[in-house]
Image 1 (cartoon, rainbow, N blue to C red):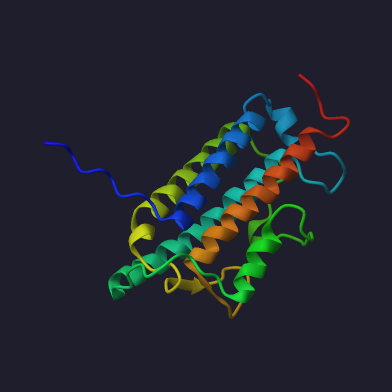
Image 2: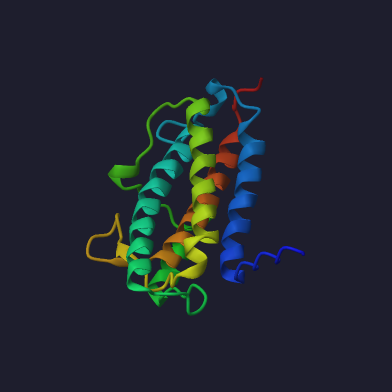
Length: 194
C-alpha cells in the first residue's frame, strides 16, 4: 500500500518558504568565506557591518516570531482555521513594501539595534535556526490556521495590531533588505580581502 502524498503547501505560504530558502542560500554564499574581521568590517563610521546586518535580523526575527507564535496559539485555541491566503490590509501591504530592499531608510528601533561586534560562529547559526523555525511554523500550524485572524500587538509600533501573515511577509522583505545591504558591504571599496 502506497503512503498518501503529503498535501502541497498553499501558494502564499510556499512563496514564503521559497523566499527564506533563497535568502539562506545567498546569505550562506556571502558569509561562509568571511573571517570575523571581514564579518565585522564597516564601510564608514556609523555604517553597519555584515555582522550588524545579520545580528539585527536575528533580533528582529526573534521578536516577530514570539508574537506570531502567541497569535497562532490563540487562533488555534479559538478554532480559527485557514479560510484563504494571507491578505494584508492596505497599511499592511505598505508596511511590507517599506521593509524591502531599496526603500527609505529609517533608524532601527532601540530594542533591535545590533551589537557593535559579533562572532560569525554565533550569528550565522542563529540566523539559520530562526529561518528553520519560521519554515516549520508556516508548513505546520500556519498552514492550518487563519493567519489573517491570528493577530498580535506590533512590537515596534504602539497601538497597532498586526496580522501574523503580514508579519511573516515583513520578515521575508526585511531579510531581503539587509541581505542586499550586507552584499553591498562586501562589494564596498576597502573591504578587507583574505
